[in-house]
Amino acid sequence: MKILHVNHLLDPITGGGTAERTIQLTRFLIKQGAESAVLTLDIGGKIPSESELEGARIFKLTCLNHRYFLFITWPFRIRNLISQFDIVHLIGHWTMLNAAVALSCIRQGKPYIVCPAGALKTFGRSRWLKSLYDLVIGRRIVKYASGWVAITEAEKLDFANYGIQSDCVTVIPNGIDPDLYIAPSDSETIDLTHFGLTQQDSYLLFLGRLNTIKGPDLLLEAFIEIADKFPHLHLVLVGPDSGLLPSLQKLAKQSTAMGRIHFTGYLGGADKTHALRKALCLVIPSRNEAMSIVVLEAGICATPVIFTDNCGLDDFAKAGAGTMVSASVKSIRDGLIKSLSDLTSLQQSGEQLKNIVYEKFLWEQQAKRYYQYYQELLKNIK
Image (cartoon, rainbow, N blue to C red):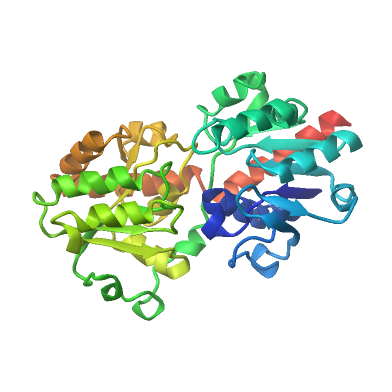
């Protein structure tokens, strides 16, 4: 079976969890015996090599505009590329690349799958442009797909708004590769003193892009409010700036806890694993997210998690594998105080999270489900 994954961002710094999902799914489908490849844009300095994707081919188009992801390519290149594959998997939604590929698939009669990974909701910046995109092409992309994949049960409702009945949507969650999160040696990791921390300092960890949707501002305000109550606790915000860093730094400098608030920028590999394993707790303060991959990264490391009710993690909370709060400063503050006042229960929730992740959320398991799903779709089409 030949599968082409389409994602405009394959660089984990700019593409975040969606890029990570594409990378790992591609890797593990190849391990399943599929011939898997990726079509993307040439954005970012950390696009993985073909060897890092288990030999998967990577086709990169030249991006002309990094704000709207406009690209240029030779005439018929997309059409000729699609013709080489049995099925196409569109990841994300609001991009001209997805539109071009979907239209080519429709014209050729090539089956394609839509997995928006939470992107069907009109949220964040450029809402009017997203609405126009849907009016012109977005709804057609979803309507004429051969299959639809949600990463949580709740995301099925997003498809319903596009006219796709819930029983037509298959749920395949995000996954994690435990081999990428083995505890590193001290010589392999960052020196925390570089960021104003000692090896003995306890800290809360934020891991994600610094933008409004991810909610680091909510966490920062909540931390400032509890800083006096927990005078030895630090806050470490890990992730690339997506426009919010200046205002976060200004807020931090105005607080009495300024010396305990640290911005590291992007961390990957052993550095990220080290930050996760050393953290007292990971906080996911997102205002909107289908299913946060960082909760799985924390789980592999047995790191406790506090997350908002906008992260698609309700089942984790019900299983005692994390603390769920609303996306507000007050609720995050109260959740932090409650969790930090009972460290035994907090650590137990981290162990429960680890058990659930190993049981249900490894990429090896999810890739098998995808492979079977592709086979069923192709069989039904024939």
